[in-house]
Image (tube, rainbow over all chains, first blue to last red; front, side):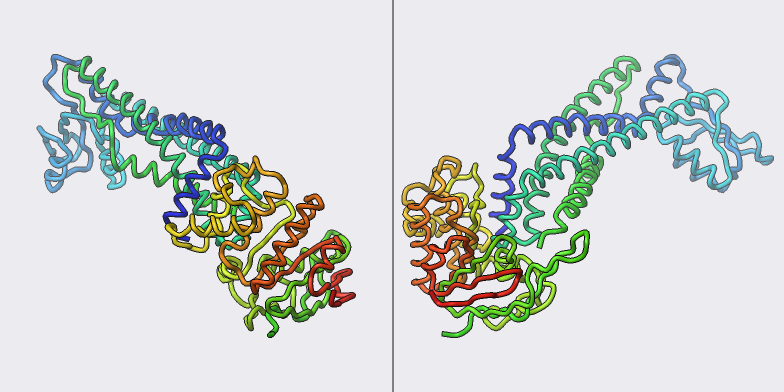
Length: 257
Length: 227
C-alpha cells in the first residue's frame, strides 16, 4: 500500500465516529493542558520565586548571599560560571561566601554541591527555596498523574475503537492489508487527534505563561523572560504522547495475521 | 488442467475447555484451475474453516496447503497478507462492507491495499461495477443499498484486483431468490473468465449450479461428486 493511500485511510478513519473523536480530542486537550502548565511552572518556578523575592526588596541592589562550604580557590572559576560574585574564600573553609544576582537553577547548583561533598546555603532564603522545591515537586507529581490518566484514556479509547471497528479491521486484514499497515492507520488517526489537542493545549498554555510574564513584569518592574514556548518541551510532549499510542496500538493488533 | 489448489492431510484443532475440537480432520482435496466448485455440509462440518485455510486466514494445526506449487503456510504472515491481496477475492454472507463509505470507496480499499495506480482506479471501479450491474452507483453510500446490491458490491470488490481464486462464503445466504440467482450467475461468469471459484453453501440448488460438489461432515470429505 502506498503512503498516500495509508494517509487517505487514516483520515477516512478519523471521519468515522466524529462525535467520539471530538470528545476524545477535548479530553486530551484538557489533560495535556493539565500536564503542560504544571510542568512549565515547575521548570520556571525558580525564576518566578526570584521575581517575587526581588519585588519584595525593590530598593535593594544586592543579590542573594550564600555561604559556600567546601569550596577552595581552585573552584573560583566554577563559582563565577554559576553566577557568583563578591566571592570570598576563607582558608579555614568555614566562612566562604558569595552572592548571586538570581536564584535561577539554584537547586541544580545545591544538589551538585551536595554530590561533591560541598554545600551552598543561605540562612535567609533557604526556607523559601525549600518551599519552592516542594511546590516544584508537587507540580511535577501532578503532571505525572495526569500523564498516567492520559495513558488510561488512550488505552480505553483504543480498546473501544478496536471493538467498534472489529469488522472493518477484519475486512482490511482479509483483503490483504498487513498487520503493520492496519496498525499504522489507527496509530495515525490517534496521532493526528493527539497533535490537534496538543497544539490547542500548547496555545492556551502559551497565553497563560504570557499572562504570568506580564504579571511579573508589572509587579517587579523588570522584564520577565519566562519563555512561553519551548521547542524542546513541545518536542518532548509530542514524543511523550506518541510512545503510549505506538505501544498500545502494537498490543491491540498483535493477534492479527 | 493442472491442480491449482492442493490440500494435503490438513488438520485444524481448536482447544476447548474439555479438551480439543477437531474442526478439520486429516482432509485432502485438490481443485483444478478455472473450476467452479461448491463445498456443502451441515453447520460445524468445517466448511468455513476450510475456506479460511484456503484463503490464508487460518494456519492449520498440521498438513499442507499448496497453491500453484507453493506451501503457503510455510511462509510468514506478511507473505500470507500478500497472498490474500494478490490471489484471493473474498465474498461473505454479511458482505463485510463499510456501510458509511460509498460504493467507490469500498472497492477502492481493495485497490489501495494492492497498490493499484490511483489514476486508473476510477476506470477499474467503473468496469467492475458494470460487470456486476451497478453502473452509476459509485457515489451511493452502501448504507442505502439493498441486500442484493450490497452483495454485488462485495463481488465487485472481490474481483477488482483480478484474483485467481474467488472464495464465496454463503454469498446468497441473506438474499432472496432473485438476488441469489443473480449472484450465482455472476460467480459462474467469473468462473467462465478463468477464475477458480469455491463456493460454500447450505443450499443444494446453488451447489448444483457448480461443476463439483464436495460434502463435508465432522471435518472430513464424505462425498465428492460432479454435478
